[in-house]
Image (cartoon, rainbow, N blue to C red; front, side, top):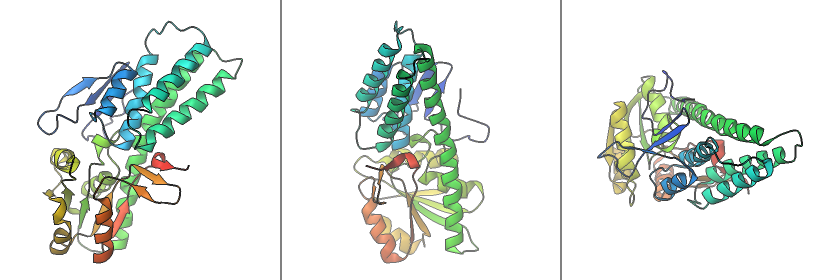
Length: 295
């Protein structure tokens, strides 16, 4: 399967199809676009741990797809019991790669529950377990893309309604929440992308997001790639930019959303929320349900 469609011509950070998986090495951006192969779970673990792939949704997708790639190989495992143990051990290993983003944990738990249910089903064999897990992960990939497009659309529509402007909007974002952080389109950056696609965006502002510079290296790269009018600003320029350039709204992503609605995100997000409140600017957190930690 291939999740890229004619309607989604954004930067492709994850290439999956025909039994292969490649990811765009984000450590090389923006200087070079280099895809690296993910051949097994160890490769997936390394890519996540070294931050060759990052962004909570993308981490979950790449981690689970690395398991799919390994399941599509000749594992020399014939029994359902052995295969279920193999799957659960691989998922537990993936969870040690980067614990901050809850999406991988949520996805792994779903796959563990599915595996145990099939293990307890006397009519199911190892082949059924293998194919069912693969299908579940591929469904996760497609769902992430459709969720992102919905987040972009409804987030943008809410901004338009609440801003009550006859002119186009100016939006500020933090870190990287676009195609590089997801299966495609993006979450917070997806809102900006939807506004641009519908002719309702005047300008986007993205912060450097120190110390890792996800905004400077990745978000600015995506915005240029898409041809979206944008300006990269220093992290300490936000208040000035909001005031002088009349920013209408701030939209950020989330590594994790707690059950009570609290969010954890990149350093600098808190100060943006405080500035938005002080200056009377709309503040949004755009994240899929897979980022919610119900524990």
